[in-house]
Image (cartoon, rainbow, N blue to C red):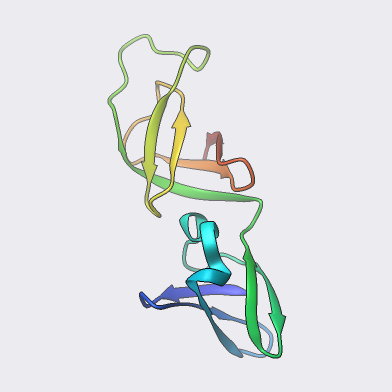
Length: 116
């Protein structure tokens, strides 16, 4: 199902075939919330029309909103630094990554994969 929006109490999803909408509470979404971005397609487990669990896509492309500036000569080989993404998730990225860049992340491990 496609993630539509979060109204503060429920996360709203829609079946793109039938346009039927479901509201999942914070217990059903859990830690998945930090990877959800509007229009992402997720796997939802339903029971009697009520979402029990939400599984995000295996990889997501998100924008970096805050990270320390890189220094001249930084390469992908050494170290890393924390970066806060637009959804609130924090991942370790290589030193050359800057604010505003789009990156691909693995939602299972919470790790940086590459620039997008």
